[in-house]
Amino acid sequence: MRVSDAKHCGYIALLGRPNVGKSTILNYVLRQKIAITSRKPQTTRHNLLGVDTEGDYQAIYVDTPGIHSDVNKALNRYMVGEAKRVIDDVDVRVLVADAERWRDEDQKVTELLLKHKGGRNVAVLNKIDLVSPKEKLLPLMARLSDMGFSDVVPISALRDEGIAEFRQLMFSALPAGQHLFAEDQITDQTTRSLAAEIIREKLMRQLGDEIPHSTAVMILKYEERPDLVEIHAEIYVERNGQKRIVVGTEGQRLKLIGQEARQDIERLVDCKVMLHLWVKVRKGWTNSAGLLRQLGYD
Ligand code: GDP
Ligand code: MG
Image 1 (cartoon, helix red, strand yellow):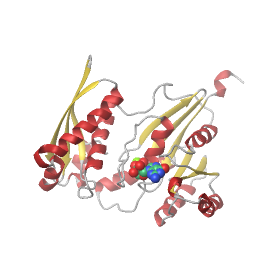
Image 2 (cartoon, protein in one colour):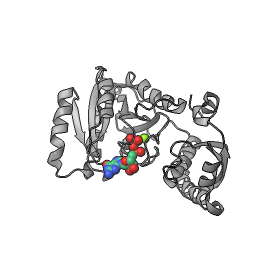
Image 3 (cartoon, helix red, strand yellow):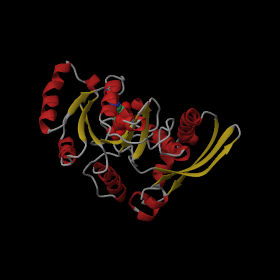
Image 4 (cartoon, protein in one colour):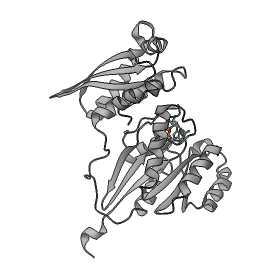
């Protein structure tokens, strides 16, 4: 065997209904925050690649927006389409479910996923920190392996329990192949688009449920100077009332969103960041094909 034959590389899709912890798992596997997360469903909008390389093994994770049945808006249809698109194309499909509760939507995603027999199908039960005693996990674990998953892995991403084992299992499931990314590359996203996602995360976390998924972020200017990155970004909302909420009394909320986003972006780019934010009303953007395309959802 030649040395190059020892290399392994493959794609792993993280699939499941929204809010089960797919993006959190990816961040913990990579030990770096590339995927934004929040308590609100449908935080992730695009498929996002996270690359994990160790020695001869390169695991390329695809974090998906989650599969759900509320597809009456163009943005939602786009997000579910993104998730389904990868199922056929990957080497390993990982169903992520909430260990606390099995729902109809988990069952639906499972059936969709198990139709695909090529490669390997693995189930992850996340949030086991919320389950006690741990014996309560056993019936669901048994059911999942009966359904046809080759492995069923209990983890708690937030407590970093089971992540290392999951990561090794993923390496062991990779087919032989040359690496597709440089060893030190951890994502396919540009820092510019990661910056937009970080701003959207702070928005989602700062806002109550009153503005569920009506916001988008467009980077107007991203300028790298020797010791500073200057970013101008617009936040889109659908209505005037939403704009007032995002801006807050005397601009306090927008200021807080800007401060939190700037700190995270500074950590990402490892230098000082100057961030300017504006809020704009774009009526009906979540259902407008043209605007969705401009924002990169196409
Ligand atoms: P996604 O929609 O599947 O990508 O889910 P996220 O990664 O955005 O996580 C949804 C929520 O679940 C967030 O509030 C996370 O902090 C939380 N979460 C993720 N993993 C765990 C876990 O292991 N335990 C607990 N208790 N919460 C978690
Ligand atoms: Mg997500």
